[in-house]
Amino acid sequence: MDPAVLRDDMVDGLEDALSGELVDEAVAMAMRTVPRHDFVADRAYENRASERGGTRVLAPETVARMLSALDADEEQDTLVVGAGVGYTSAVVADLVGGRHVHAVDINRSAVIDARENLQKAGYDAVLVDCRDGARGLPEYAPFDRILVEAASVRPPQTLLDQLADDGRLVMPMGGPEQTLVAVEPDPATGYDVVGEFGPAAFNPLLVDGEQAGGLSRNRTEREDREFAQQGYFAPSGWEYEWVDWDERLDGR
Image (cartoon, rainbow, N blue to C red):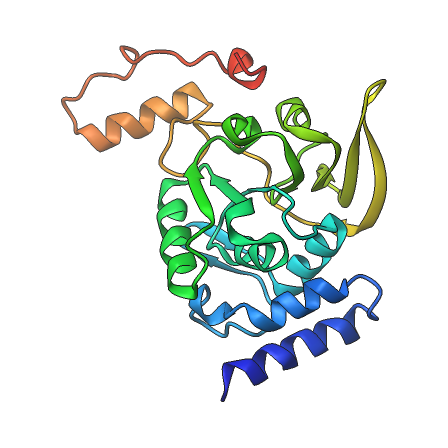
């Protein structure tokens, strides 16, 4: 079947499921344009989440809700934290323009996958870099919009610092119960929650060392894995440099 027809059917189904209230018209049009099959090979236009290469692929309904909450407009510089397979970044690029979209992911294989998918789909102007998402992308700040595709109990201060004065950040906030929220900077309190967009269930925002294949925060688990990987006569693992996680989480 023609992919364009499948995209229309997908978006029509989302609008019916969400009663049209949570799907912005510009977001719906962008999702009717972006070829999701270039990012998701298996049943690309079904409203379901999946896994690819160790990263979560968001269901189209979740993408629609997040981007409607983001309320992004043309030429607004946007940071996507959690590049995944690149689909969300492509939809954002359709909204604001490809050269205004920057995406980061802590998983290097996901970064490579996202770059390849975006290029194949015609969105190669999007910049995708391998970064600790909680640290953002300070070289390109400030951002008019920041979208975080991972959960945290509160917005990371580093990301709030990279937000323009009149900017907006959207993320699933809380844990274990999460709510999709939009926040805007406030000089007195740091940020204000300006909108809530229903319940969410996202993986937690990772810091460097927690990604798949990275160092484990639990020292015993890390050393056991290193020992197994290096063989029976390998060092115990205690010789490796210790990571001070308190300092890492505080941004030092």
